[in-house]
Length: 244
Image 1 (cartoon, helix red, strand yellow):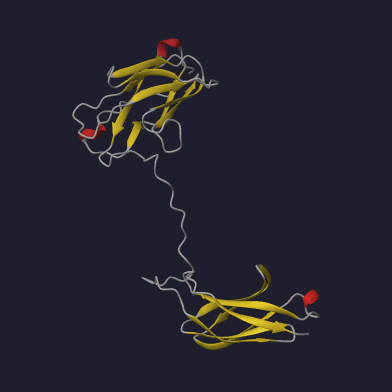
Image 2 (cartoon, one colour):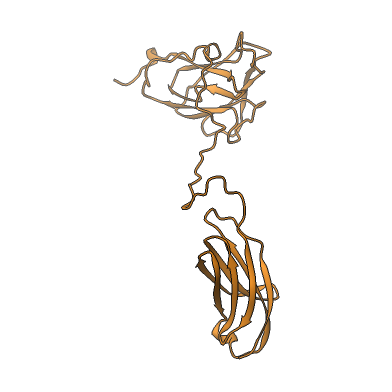
């Protein structure tokens, strides 16, 4: 059944400084119906981690926040949410509305979202709410994992010689790597070649663009190795005098 004015209730939000010194509102997202009263409990009696807090409210469709109170002035601050929409609230001392700050939202609608829940005294049980300051760790495991490998690979450029199409690098490596060889003119990279190389010696050829193959020029050749955990060796370099 649709909610009526008689169904209006008081819903509570608790300021909370957690055992790991995070500052949060509990809950940070609160459902309510039009006509409900929302009360923020600003103090935390007996919590040795407790800091001072204030509470500001931004009604739906507004950009002007209203200061409702502060913990050094009053133990609670209240307002009636008379219009439907999203009300933002925050503590200006601890991050405000910035991402990861001590803030939350009241989602107000015409329907009754259910009985109010008392946030209680979470500092007495040591509870940790979902941390709004935490970021999702989306790091993926590399395709090749070398446990404890923090040592870059080594590459020795034994020889660099011109070829009919560009240049060839003779390299030596101690582990399986990807070798990158490129030709530069000044700072401009003209050609790049990557090749998987097993431990030992190998040749890696790099070809110039066709438009440059009929012109004699001096180029700089660079070569380096990359291992399975994306560590790079120092770059080895040599000068190539190319002639068509």
